[in-house]
Length: 374
Image 1: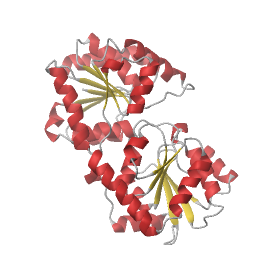
Image 2: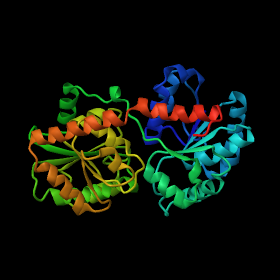
Image 3: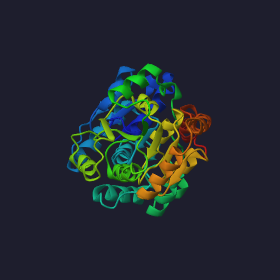
Image 4: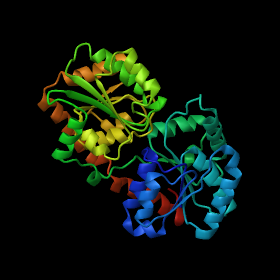
């Protein structure tokens, strides 16, 4: 049984979906529970035959009701493993599992740092740290950087393992016709060089840093235009539009909002730029690498481990460094950019497949079931 906060198309949710779909034989024996809504991932999993429940939790005040509903589901299905994803699911799912006498609880940590401004999440994380020696038998971290930081927060180091995200490369493809159609829809000319970023609108994702870097870059690169894709990255976002007005960038930016054809969006850009200030293991960076895009990224989470020597890494929240990194790639010839992207593609395909990630998760589960030490 997988328990997760929600099932919209974000990083952890997509990784959960890929893990389940990596083993078609296990679909009939897997139950997925969203604490909130069904979401697009839940609908997709249901269509494939997975049992999916949405508990519609709307606030922390309904936590006790949610725990009881989880206990009832666990008593109904008696899962051999309860895998939870992210702090709120770790806490509520872990407590419910203990009440339902499910012994094999595995928590999932998906980010590196917890913003202190989000006091409720900080509180939940601190409670998890206190009970991490009692509730979970294993704690799977998406990145080594996340493991190190959560040990500092007080998590039980002896129970933590690192399993990086894996990618389904068969799903990461785009035809020439799709690429041309998207660029035409965005009114990009053949000579335009497109710098793009895919990520939901959130302070951790660094859209403000992206805009500031674009303002610096446009002074010397008339051929560059910018593309933002992701939930909240659309013209109805007054804060984002305000930044574009402030820096005079309206004619340089295209905002597509949330899309289902992320692979096509990545294939349609020339340079991928990840401006995040906080990541665990950045999914979209790996996806851009798999699409053969040359990448500039902030050095957050396990980005350095992911890209190796194939990308340019810069400090987070430094628009000057981000612009300089992009300028360095723009100075390359088209063929040099292509070669850089192909090196990135070879690396991610060799080191970070969903098959490898699935084998690691499965190894943790099997060793818990037979009582062996991991």
